Image 1 (cartoon, rainbow, N blue to C red):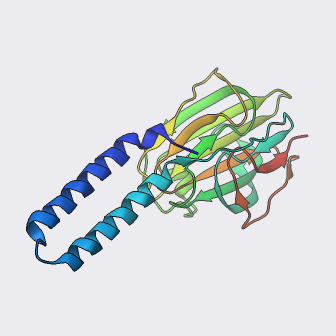
Image 2 (cartoon, rainbow, N blue to C red; image 1 turned 90 degrees about the vertical axis):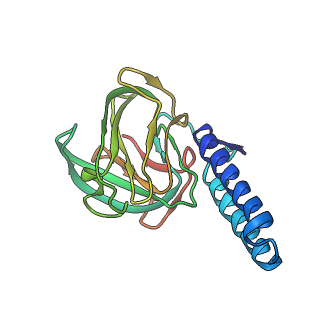
Image 3 (tube, rainbow, N blue to C red; image 1 turned 180 degrees about the vertical axis):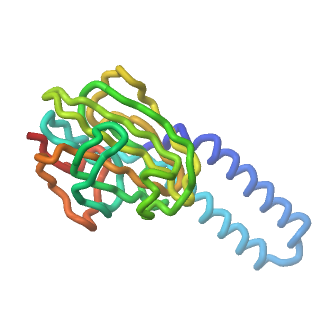
Length: 220
């Protein structure tokens, strides 16, 4: 396991603030109250631990297969439905949505190998990630990758009520490899994946996914 580079500034800043707070408490605020000093130290340790675990990147054996769509994120499958995708395809698609809690790994990965045919970033609101309008009104990105067999897969990084910054590492025309990091969302979010109608869905509502490992669907 390693720690993601997107978290270095936050982890260092948080560590320094907590250290300063504990030193202030030890020498000035609670110098005669050992219980208060101990409780503050424990709370600081837990908070710092939560921040560190959020930016963890576990070592995994990634799934690579040209006819499979791999989960772009860790989380829980909350939506599987046929819907109209009106930004790029402007037609019906199969949607699979993954909710990422603050306790999940928040690295986002390319679901297929291919060429990035479309990319767009939208600033927006910060509705809770499971809100029906979060996919159209929240801060988000839309990425379309055309796979080797010609099928196009669209996926969106969507910020949630806690997440306030979406990071991406791709651009239009760029070749990408399945399972490679394509971005990061900080502190709770959602990823929507839009698939061809004839794709065979391999997950169900409530399933837990692992980014780069879980097979979401089979492309025809």
